[in-house]
Image (tube, rainbow, N blue to C red; front, side, top):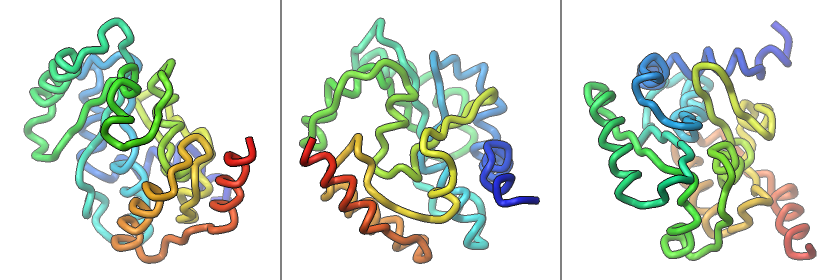
Length: 201
């Protein structure tokens, strides 16, 4: 198998579903009924890193994140209803599952994180704004979304995302990852370049 095959969406999907929780979520996808729904973030890239470390696929994965997009109702109550429905479908897995309407993130993000956040137009735009390009990944039964390719993910390279130039948040997240997967590395050059470009723009 060539290097490109090792980083392909098909390989990524095969790796992700070695985690029984990811596999179960995708198998029950239709029942979740999430508009523009995606399984995202840590449960995906951390499964890959666990496999590369020779660990159990679900080791140290704290929760499983589901994004959806519904601009017709930006209320917290509507999001809680979606969460309750998903919980009823996935309760037997015994893991924490968090459901987030990406259409309403801009209404609470700054108050919570102290940083501005634009209104989004799709769930994929939310995936695109994770703190590190390597971790901008999402999956559903019919698609993989990896806007920055899968190279940095499989190489374990952590650097800043120009869309979310928040060094303090980046450093905290990177430190957490390095505690669990010490072979990961921060690309300081790319990190500085990304922030310099934003400062000068």
